Image (cartoon, rainbow, N blue to C red; front, side, top):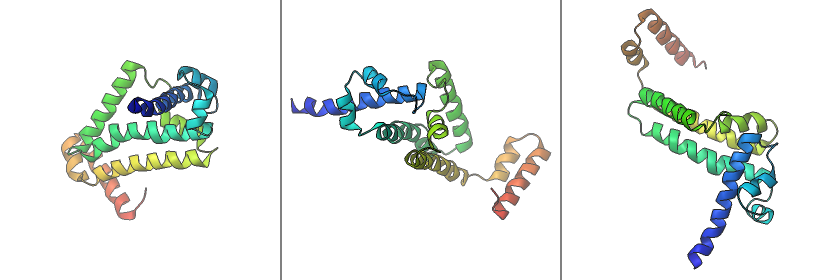
Length: 180
């Protein structure tokens, strides 16, 4: 009996988080309603405010506990174990776009980007959390790109040699001058 008693609050918290994620995704954080969240979660305001002191804390939890872990699992971790980063990145994009189109899951765009556009200028806590996620994403891409030899990659994969050489020159110049 104790096991189910411990599971109930986590289940309630998880339902609230999922309902809030959908509500904020569809209506934006500022337009998302607490009453709609508790209705969708089949919960109460008391339960919501037991787990999250305010709407802001609920929004932070969505970034930290829903959006970040999904990106980590589906992007960062897969790139970290990649032995063929270019093809793996292409496959990740193709697979995620196909899945999103087939399921209609993200018809309103990327949940992280939507929150970034709406909340980063308004709330420092959102801005810092979102920046941490983007920074890890950039880091995972940079880490796999360090293993590539751009000359060998482009010469073997691009058929238009003059374009290829221009790009390689550009990459080498930018790399030497530390331009970004």
